[in-house]
Image (tube, rainbow, N blue to C red; front, top):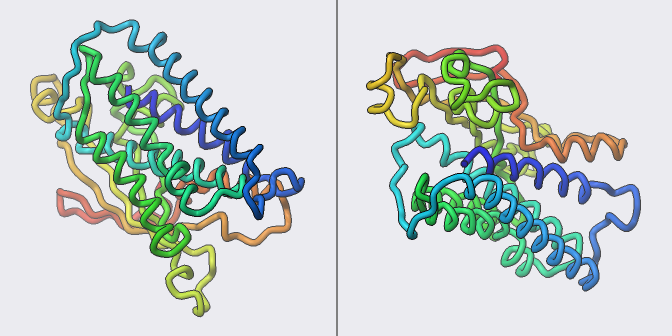
Length: 303
């Protein structure tokens, strides 16, 4: 189910961000004052898109599983919290897109934060409530904390700096584990990028120049701290111990360089759109890994 949410996030983010990144035609430029037609169009479109997505989830997913009375679960020990990182990122970027849409409409900064930046949290909360009425899953307080964290990172930076100096980013590489449990971890590259937590890495990517704007640092240069996990075939260690596999589960932390593509200078409107849209992807770079085995590793290029 969490993979379905992440897929929705990717489709919503890429589609809307591509549109709002266009600057070649005045229609796509941000309004200096409140444009009520734009604002109303945004609210109506968001409501229709969210309703369609929720109805689709209900028919294609929840309808195939038994219903139950509302109940909560504690899944905080699953997947070494990698699923929670997905929640944080989804909430952050859907909220960022909602905020940018209202900026395009000329809404006040206050309303951008109140009604735009909270879009991801609101949508994911609704899905979480639906989980609560499904016998297969349940309302997860851990997921809610993760959703709030993503929104908090977005809103907090806007209140503190009026910009996003620290971005959430994502990278992925294929692993051997998906071949063992393809039904759970994915049967092809696209599925694995969403399902195989062993190959996913989530990053906090800080723009160096933004913290020292009088310096000579390249404006596009970031330093990134990443988190990943390895050795997971099942959500919990106990489930894995009961299986036929003995991979050691471990946490992994990374230190690397990154590029803020939105700060790369180019005269091409097309490239600006592409760079801005894919800026949630961590650029491969030299990386140091620190893990729970106390065996640091160096990668010339880490994906």
